[in-house]
Length: 110
Length: 112
Image (tube, rainbow over all chains, first blue to last red; front, side):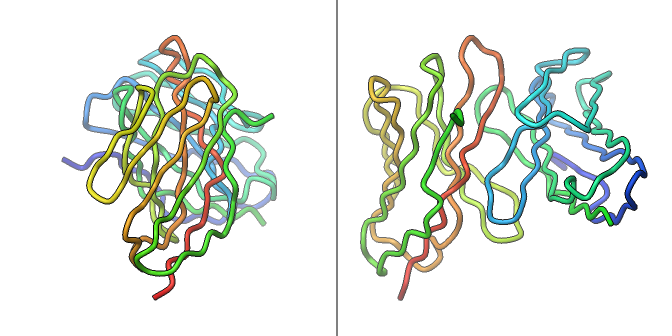
């Protein structure tokens, strides 16, 4: 099993550009999450989903959008990238117990 | 007020000592709590979870939950240099919302 797969691993984006961070899981988990982690800090919840077609805002949703059309996929969309969105992004999935994390995407906005 | 709070540290302990990591939470409805370990540049990995008041032991690790005080802790006995990492406390929101909130993490340094 691959678990949780995130792409890309690294990306440099110019201010104002848009991009989609991909996340897919093969564990048939209902719950999926997007977090960002700034240097020396914990994980801040951006958006989460409790099942296909259902998404909800987390602690820091501004500047991001998500969709959940299938159980497996939970892409995160950045519109009009800003330097404040420079961070490491983690996708995770769970069945309401242990959350399994992807390897992370290191995003730099310049 | 953050929903889950931790002292960011660093917490420094000598090898072989007990490391005590603490976490408080504000959502009284939260039912389950998790401790994750994160090495620098890596993804978090689960150490333990706890949802009942009291202690839960797994090898060198003991998680403690006090719902009345809204307090969660992790004790690491016989600390090893390989335990040096950031420890993240997380709480799962009430009513099966699925909302999993993390604290800011505590950096632990175990000195040989």
